[in-house]
Image (cartoon, rainbow, N blue to C red):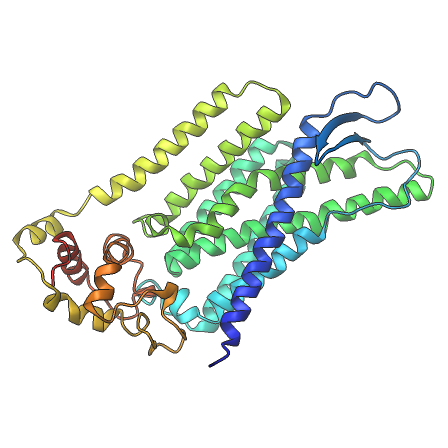
Length: 399
C-alpha cells in the first residue's frame, strides 16, 4: 500500500474549492434575489423589506440604503466565502497547471517556453486582468455599466485569444477563468468590504456616511453577479473537450460567456418582475449560435483531409496499436511512465485492445476530433495518425 500525498492534496483542495464556491455563489445569488424582491416597508425607516418562508419558519428581512440609525451589536460580514474560493482556486492552479506545466500548460507547437516562463506569464495575466478591470471601473467608463461591460468583454476576448496562442487551449481556458475570478474576489477585498467598513466607521463616529461608497460597492457586486455563470462554465470546461478543442477555442469561450451573461440577465429581470421575453429570445439565440458554431467546425474538414480519408485503406488494431504505444501509453497505462502521473488520468488505460475498445468513443473525441490529446502534443502526433485512429474507430474498432 502506498500513500499518494499529491493526489490526496489535489482531492482535498478541489473539494474545498467547490464547497467554498457554492457558499460564495449561493450567498451572492441570494442577495441579488433579495434586492430584486424588496418592496417599500409599511412602517419604519428601512428602504425596503421582504417576507419569506423556509425550513418551517418565516423571515422578515429589511434593507437600509445607507445604514440603520443604530448599529447592531452582531453584524455578519459576507467575505470569507469569496476569499476561500479564490485561495483554494489559486492553489489548484498551482498544483495542477504550474506543477504540471510541461504536460497541462505548455504547448511546444505554439510557443517554446520554460516552465518558469509559463508560470510567470500565467501569474502576470491575473495581475494584468485585475489592473485593467479596476482602472476601467474607476475611470469615466465606470459611469455606464453597459459601456464598461463591453470594454471588459473585449479585454477578456483578447486575453482568451492571446493565452490560447501561447498555452494549450485547456490551460488558456482556466487562466481566463482565473482572471475573472481574481476580478470578482478583488471587488470584494478591495472595494465592497472596505467601503462597508468605512460606512460602519462613519456611523460609529456619528458622521453621515458617503452614499458613493455604497454605490461603488453595489456596482462591483452587480459585475460579480454577471461574471458568475461564465466562471462556472470554465470550472467544468475541462470535462468538455468539444469546447476548448475547437479550432478557435477563444471564440467558443466568448460565445459561451455571452450566453451565460444573457441567461443571468433573464433571471435578474425575472426576479424584479420585469418582462423577460426579449432577453429570453436573446439568450436562446446565443445558445443556438454557440451550438451551431461548434457543430459546424466538426463538419468542415479541409479538402485534402477528405481526399486522404477516402483513399485510405480500412484500419485494424494492428495498424493503430503502435500509435497508441507511441502517443498514449506513457500516461494511460496501469503504471504510467510519465512522471507527472502516478495513475492513468481519469482511470483511462489504453495499453490493450480490450481497454482501447472500451474507451474508443472518448479517444475519438479528445484525440481525433478536438486534437487536445496528447496534452500539448508533446509526442508530435500528426493529423494523419489521428485520422488513422479515427477510421479504425468509425469502422467499429475491429480487432
